[in-house]
Image (cartoon, rainbow, N blue to C red):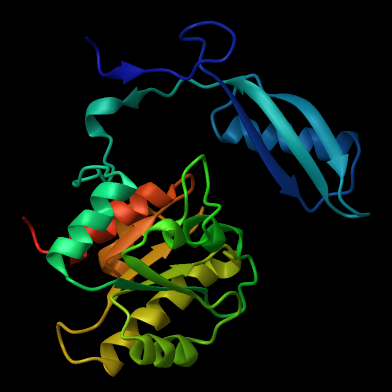
Length: 244
């Protein structure tokens, strides 16, 4: 079977794609022409501006639809595959109880100026996400949720005070790569505060992270959009609980 595939729009193999963007141009025919020109330079030919909306007096938002000639080579796709099994809450609890003989301590926060707690709450709060209970539901975990806009020194101090096994940071704000800068600051602060090999497991999450960038950011794991509490719990058990 061929490993080459095309985008799918109306019919198989038609190459149709849809993109959206904003241009600093006042809404009107000239703006739509500019959007079509940009789309054509991206390889969308012919480009159809199917939606435009003024965003104030000098900016316009566009949705453009059209075919591209590009192919995707599936054999060249590189992603981070899950290297651990998904466990039920019962199995996670049993593993922690057997392997650690104490509760696993998880500290979570939105760091820096980030005030978006939806992501961290979905993972930590008992109500959970996508039909799965959050980590507070796991009897063998002690969860400390620091909430939003937590300064990096405060995060480190609280991790030491709570003797955290794992620290989960959520980053939604991405303007000027703020999520990357903050994550590196967190990693550096923990490396400085703990002796080599003794810092907590560092896990970063957010919709704009590249899951393959953990090493370059100085953390142990990155979770992207759509991550469920069960995936995080299974990873923590895999990474922190002795095998067997």
